[in-house]
Image (cartoon, protein in one colour):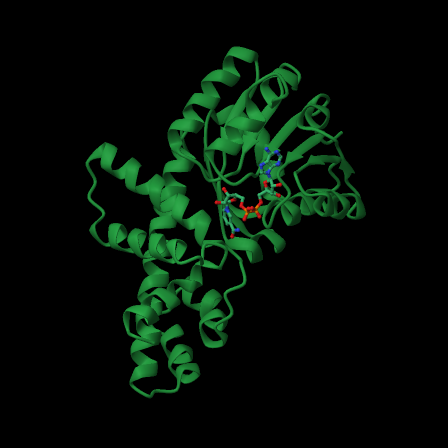
Length: 292
Ligand code: NAD
């Protein structure tokens, strides 16, 4: 029989990902803070739980997809948390994007409780979650990764064990650096092109076919053209990720001069009340600099 799954955190990513597991035949019990997301899980054929403890107590595999390190710690530790309530031998796969250090500590705490832990953050956005084509960057033990692979294959397409606990998060931090710098470069090009009076639709079409083409340009083109900044991936979350990569890089002595500037622009968007917008709203930061 397929392993029984508990899913904690049914947001923009967790909802479609858990639904893909249900479509693949898994028995999924979920818990999240919003009632409408629990109703959505039930409508998709899953089971709604009233707490983390209730969701995980009889699960073989527990997946967490919550915003950041504090929420991973909140659902994992303490009397009502995963480590206290999951059964011995269960496998915990944290797919949230958090600090590598938090993942290392969680793996160590899990080991003391007989719970195996993988960090397995993802890239590919909401569209990648819906289409089950995410990139999954894992950290942990090879045997645990091998056991998790069929589940991860129901969620994504490129699934790689990057090293021991925390390694997946380090790779995800690099991913977020690359994505932010890419969006910033595209946003600067958009403002430059518009100020030059060039047709933006034509320009983005031809840019997409050359060396300037990128997944970011393809996926965010319509956001730029329509100034449609509904999330997607929220500025608040990318701000969190720029903090993670900046800290992790400083700790190993890797300078990120361009990344540091983009991190400040993300911070400025947030400070201006745009934290709930999609990260393509970096275009707004560039427009403000341009006096638009
Ligand atoms: P989201 O804010 O839409 O969803 C987070 C969910 O976590 C919410 O449904 C909330 O109820 C739940 N949650 C928070 N605290 C909880 C608690 N204590 N107990 C139970 N549930 C709790 O966020 P998202 O966009 O789905 O992102 C989730 C994670 O995935 C983040 O770490 C993010 O950085 C990462 N990520 C997001 C994207 C994207 O495009 N949105 C892409 C890749 C990775």
